[in-house]
Amino acid sequence: QFTTDTFLSSPQSSELTITASSSTFLNLTVTLPQNFSRGQTGSEFVNVNTGSSTTLTGQYSWQENGLTENTSYYYKVRYKNVNGIWTDYSELKYKYTLCDIPKNVNVIILSTETVQLSVSSFTNDTLGNSGYEWDCIFDSGGGSSSTQRIFIASGLIPNSTYQYRIRYRNADGEVTSY
Image 1 (cartoon, one colour):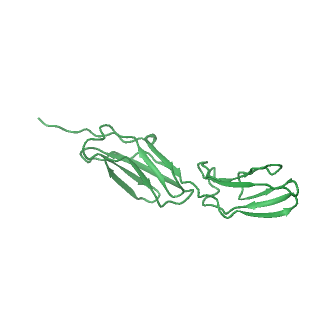
Image 2: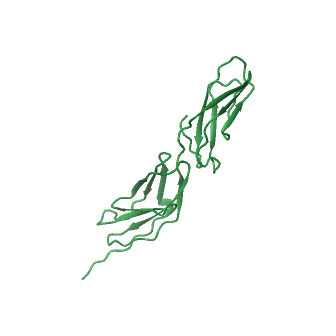
Image 3: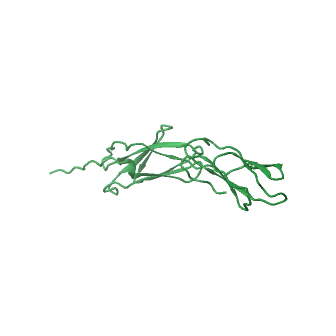
């Protein structure tokens, strides 16, 4: 009489969830495999961009830090069964990190009816859905723009107060706070 353990199925890329939690962190979670609580089962996450990997025993979530803002990171994952035998890797999945909060906003008054607003650029600001979202809170002709680092608001009423705000949008379309 003898006993043996079966292999695990490889994880699918749809079972790997990657969420952006900041401009320098990504959270990765893979669906728990069958009988995950037996022995020394585990997972291995691989950052394909850097080639680095993290091997976990009894854990199926991981946070990678030290990343660059608005940059895509590709990952694959695999399971380890109770006998320490690894599955094949999942297909690749990627996610962009978030952008930092906008900084260095400048305002130049061009005329009685026109102002120019500008903000510092951010990493990879031309990729995917990346962009700048300007918003005129008290809009009497200021409008808004969601694509340019420099925004010219015209048609303003002379001797009036306007309040603007800006946020960045990463390549996945996720926005920062104002």
